[in-house]
Length: 640
Image (cartoon, rainbow, N blue to C red; front, side, top):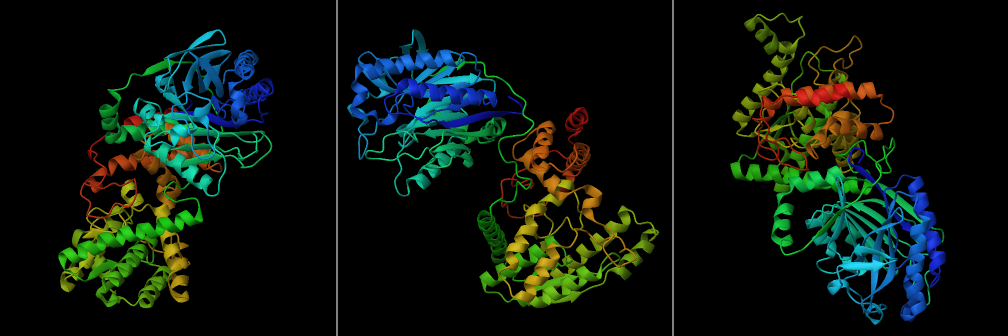
């Protein structure tokens, strides 16, 4: 599979009830379309060769025989295609009629699966015509060919293992797909004929999302649509593709035209998640020793796709939809507030001290303190915000800092660090004109010393402001801003900090809101170097270490899924089409070099709440030796 991706499709063909050869022709055309589009597997609806709504016609011998003949014609018609197709039809075996799914490829039958659970309630009467596949013989003879028959049959090719279930099988308490997943299936296909009722579609989509998440798998669902009888019920042609709880693609409901819904599924992503979640393996060990399985190796064509048939979002830490983003921001604030509130109650230190710089991180930390103290019923005056102007402080950040603290009603202190730093330059014999690392770190450590000492004076807690992105890159002064008594932002990446502050701004008065919005638009900078001749920020962090959007992207896919640099490079190009590959490689090298070299700072982090799936605390989520080598990662980047 190219970079671990496989291209899958859910098809909704036009059908005529009982016209097997017409239906087979429509299916063949869609298989050919799928093959032309380099789709590796395509799934069709339940009983699509006959149509689902045949009723008592299923017991007409002509329909049974012609369904098999239509399958034979479909095999002949698709001999030259490489795409695997999963189609539905009634099959007769040992005087039993089964509602079955058959996997075909290049004129061959790979396997067949009977429907296990037959609905016989409400508008459904399947037990009137079909037999459950629970006790079906393990081999199906059809079209002069033999094929493995049963829900325990899985098909495998490289990283892909897939299973098949049919409609109602998904709706039972323990679906066949759950067992298939525990036996290794990372993709499940469902051939369905689920009619439409008020509210049913939302329930169905949630069910598919949940099953894909529970199985840590992709779930491809294709349901009957146009052409089915509407004598008593209506079918909308639902085609859905989900991956581990996320809906990747879906059809247009109630369309009269045939549809082919396509998505690229990331098998490596699924397999890594299973590897990381030990409970999945434990569950498999406890369950599958009682089940006999058949795994059949097949050949699936391998393609290299320059453009993925799925959206790769450039900000993986930030939800793409506004409503999801608002919900996420509220939840993150709640976690941060919950963590800080517990620390305050436990220590009985009802005062907080933090440095306010006019930047994003300290602003977010201050807002968390405000909300926490409000929730605990503690006066905001017991939050001490200290602005500590230095050699690089600009009028914009200073003004925003002062105005924000006044607007929020906290206790404000100003302590200029210039004289103290100049004295320290003299003490250690450092030339103040040499704007090197020593020059910068002296300022950072002086500020931290002030915060710690004031906290001692006031019997309070120093609240850390550093974020996850800075920790990943080591963009913090060791025992300077690296240190605090509780780091509320420690697992919030830089790209998310801006959205959190923007979201919170809407909850304040217009004056406070305008200050917060201007802070979100201020360039990210530690302001440790003197301003330019116009008094503007001269030291812009992203000019030095690279765009945080890229670094957060690298961080997410490196830690969350353990992807190789070559795969991340491929994904970056999908997400950031406007960035040249040479630029991406440049900042990737910076990321891996800094990530490995700066681990020693992360090995002794202060406490702080974990808010997302990626965290760098040595106690919360990330355990890495400080002297690990980045050679393998950098070598792969060089070879790309």
